[in-house]
Image (cartoon, rainbow, N blue to C red; front, side):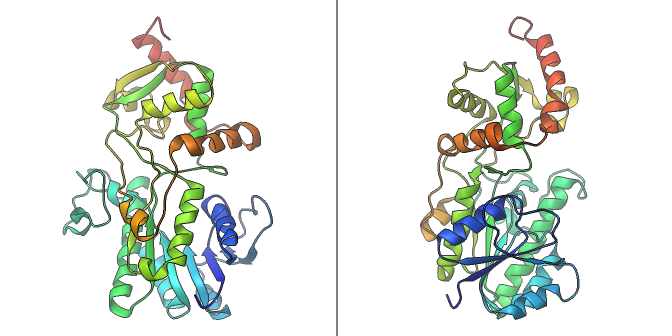
Length: 343
């Protein structure tokens, strides 16, 4: 690499904070460009440049500061976001890492599991989309990230723009502002019955520290990563019931009372916001490509979840998640109608 400076577009809240730590450990000097809405959450802050990427000329000014060893884009959500980044950083970075999402698969009907980066459904015309309004938050997010990828890979094919794409699933770890793991930790702590969708899909999440290491590997091994997309994911594949059982073991709690409920009934009686990990179909990324080309090995859930538990039970000082406070009483009341003795 010609320089050791790495620019992060966004990254003051969760993934970016862990990425800064991993970059420093690997010998890079990170700089973060952000709007100044979130203070640096821990440790020594990196070099910070305040601004808004949507303002004309802002990205061009960043590119002109130096030739960056890498640019990591954590905040591109639309095709114009990525198009402006290409225009600014082409010939000003060795590798441009776009953080995409596993949702580029989830917007599709009948995607294969485990889903690979080369799944033919990703390139179908027309796309076999799930029956959900395109402007709903999950669909808009997944379709927006797909549009970013299309623009970036077109630029790679047409002009050699040095893009690498990382597609994470749900990410767990300290500083996670979505509080999804915390909502389930609270459920197992309260000792009540735990509703799970039936049938229940399996999922593969990833630890934030492992995701950060993957991004650094993509920068270090840029000659293998440029022009490629890589799924991220942990070493464990779990159902929601298995996840609850693992939490109880890690917390030294009795085995949980699991109450299977038809997915449609669960959504009707409790609401969709009650089950952050309540998948009704499998969501399992194939991670062989990242393991083989980038020499990356993620951890199992039982290895990283203790860090998540420790953060939320000892360090986190914010509010309890709405997915717990707004729904838990409804869950317990509904469980009593199904399992009077257990509930």
